[in-house]
Amino acid sequence: MIHIVLPLLLVDQVLKVWIKLSFTVGQKAQLIPGLIELQFIENEGMAFGWALPGVGGKLLLTIFRLVAAVGIGFYLNRLIKERMHAGLLACIALIWAGAMGNIIDSAIYGQIFTRSSWGMLAQWVGEEPGYASFLMGNVVDMFHFTARWPQWWPIDSMRSHEIFPPIWNLADAAISCGVISILIRQRRFFASPKPGSVA
Image (cartoon, rainbow, N blue to C red):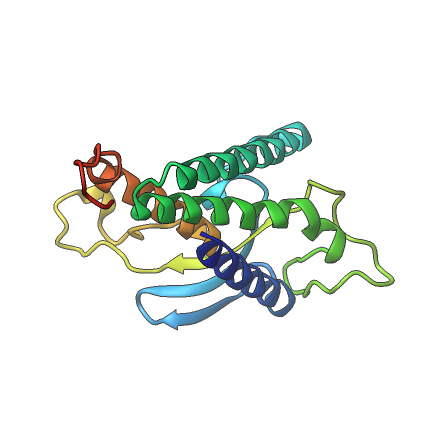
């Protein structure tokens, strides 16, 4: 599963570093007009901007991420040894890679970058110190769906509003795709193999 985890981690981190050093907070750039744009924000909490309040909440969340990532890694290793369905292994690898991608941001970005702000780009740490201590960094998010519900949509409160307003990153997408795929295909993934069949 390393062929899934490593490339995803690499692309996730390269994209985040590029955004961090090239965009100021809130800066936007069209990616697919009318559908998706790049918009840089820093997320202090969980996927899609959810957060626990305060420094204690931030530390608790980062520790939870670390424990969860270690647990997922051991679980994936066990599934590989048990020769589970290749699709399930791929989904767990996506979830693990996504978790690790966001942990890297939280763990070290505060120490290797200066603070991002409105109208001011972050830089690599040099004469200026980093913006946060170990485990207290922010997660870099950049993808924003701009598609909106049409005016004819039958639910009044949704008309002309964004279909999916949270801003997210590749790691969030990997976690979401892995979880959704497991939910959709769980019968196939966890079915007992018939004698002589190959998963």
